[in-house]
Length: 328
Image (cartoon, rainbow, N blue to C red; front, side):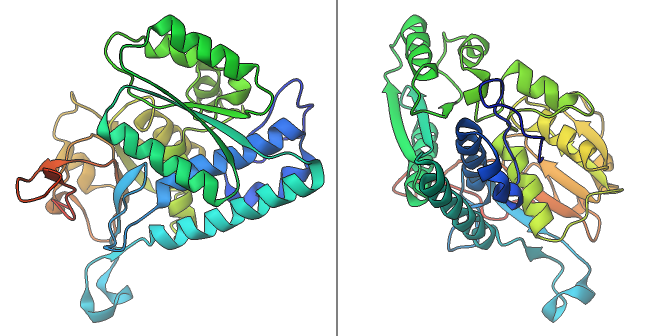
């Protein structure tokens, strides 16, 4: 989304696509920083490991299934190279950070708020910190024990809202039991809501013709993977499995905006397999490994498997493993 320029004191528009980052110098300082932070958040959705398994903050596997005539050796599917795409995005973000610093003397600042000791949340925060440092973004780590009170957490967010060196605030979800996530997210200044999870941002995403200040990073990353992989969404039948406010709902809205025909499936949907069989694109965001089976997919279907799912494995030192292929 490349929105019109507006005074940064009023609103800071965030460009969700790295391809539009060249517009950063035309924005005010806050908007320029938030643009870069939005691209950084999206960047986590496209990281892969050497084993060709996407292990970024947003998705564990991305598979592109196409006709055998288009692939060597008659294989039935190929893998979208998330690692290569992430490298391109990282380079673009790093260049824009340098440009913003040289032209305006500003370094984008991101505050990451972590509550509790969930292993997966700790990994996500660590990866975000490493990625930010790689591209020259300043990171402020705000970690709290699970015993911290909601009042103390809200006070921290209030202080970050008033910190001029911080241009984006990210609260790692889920929060421990006892916290009201809606209250915590609502406390973030919408201009610093780099995750795009505020009521205003999600509402603007759903409203035709409106532009949110930021888009949730996982769906934004999915759209970027499709775009950079040459997958034309317009006119395609897309199925989104899951309806969470973090992935499923905004994913469906972004696909609709790209002129796709979208069906959203959830726990009450009847015969999900039949729905998936007619899809050109399937986005699985149900948090359950091996949920989608191979015979649910037609030839030529593009599959994005969102999320990192742990499976118990006593043979591993960690006690778990990340499924490599599963039903896909």
